[in-house]
Image: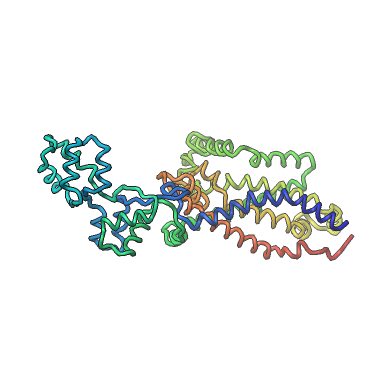
Length: 436
């Protein structure tokens, strides 16, 4: 019977395990993998090619590569060989002129177009127009600039023909700088540690999470206790009323707050009629922008907390409150000595859940202040979103955004462990000392 029950339990747990793997473990694993890459829009998420561009040449200026080698990379040369002759045969060059080039100039290499043109002018079948003569030199041009090589070996072989004095180390450095695909790297974390705005992002995030979390927990708990002492029908009405911020679509909720705080909105008109400063309270100043961000997110979180706390309050035996009233306890004493000690579990859950939610939430900030004015209300998750998915420059940095997200995951795990110790989780799940 035990084995049969265990098999049934495993069968019932299989869908939950699959959902956990698909929606938590897999995204977290992929985030950890991408965090150690330089994936971006420019590199793509698949393999790349080797291309020497002007950007690569500027990048190499900051390395120890010899200046003569860097100059050689940007130079063009002209060679008459089997490869260039085959390319020339596919153009409009006269066959007789091409035959003379192959017969008289085969095997020669020119470092400048003028020297090559001078030799072409000496051929009997040369074009009479200067423009046609210059066009005839194009198939013989050799350069690594803006030429794509899919294989590193081919790329280094081409470099060697242009830079015969380059060492294997030099060729490797040029190939690494010229690779357009993604590579494994720890530079994302180094960049985050050395960026000037990292401390500001951390400070904004800590302030946002702490202030909004305090609003969510304390306001939600206050509302739940207040509604608990109201008549049942009145309390039910307030429960439904405070549920509205939670069930309202996010975009509609953000639009409502814009109407409330923007120019010609409710606050603007009310302040103007009262002779108070009237401006865009959502983006017009740093204090009002932060107040808006905290309240917008706070009412949603307080609504969630109030519903959970209300359910937990109804689980407290009403006989305990009646007995306390017989002993002369007032409402405050009932709250502090009976209700709150038995609310540790729901308070732990709401606090930890809301902390993790706030650490990763950005959508309401994005829809309201968008991190403004300037970047004063930009938090870590919003910056990660902009970096990886909504970059103003168009070059989305997937690797750097994943590194920022991975840091949030680690911070969330650490805070969860701290919450479990702070609320003495082991005592909450231990066997009751008194059984009824």
